[in-house]
Image (cartoon, rainbow, N blue to C red; front, side, top):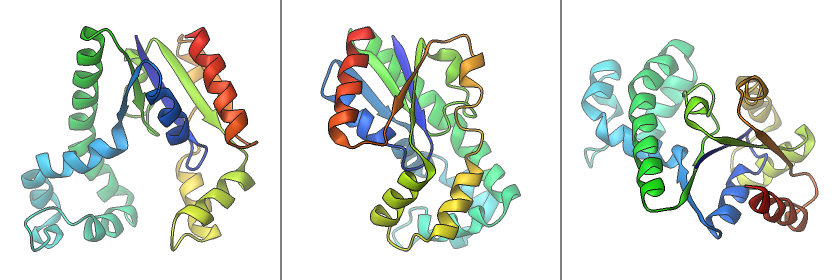
Length: 194
């Protein structure tokens, strides 16, 4: 079985993934695959953005690439068109490998919908939390985060979760506003249902 796990920034999907990882699940973190995608697609990225994105050690410098693409929707689209197909294919390869080994795979991806994972999932977990809760977590977790930056990030994620309920897949919602004990109980209950 392949389970999709998604949620907006600071809703707690990584905390849910960590709890699932302790059970019978193989968790595939698509965000972490993004780092590998940069290395695997370095030549295409240099062709698109120039040699200025390369660090002294020869790797793609995320600190240079990030501000370059996140300030320009067209450049972000170019980056996504290069990295997302590789990330999708690698996540699916790992999920299929986990299934062959008798494990259920969890694809942990903020962009589960836009990256085309939903069609491959048997079940979906959507983690939600209120805006103020997510803002507080972001300010505590991310150095340099401001309320304005978080608001911009949230606006960019307005479509996260919107199409899930029309996907034909069972969607399980976890509400993560009340702390770790509540979250843990919800995940344990969900594991019994999966």
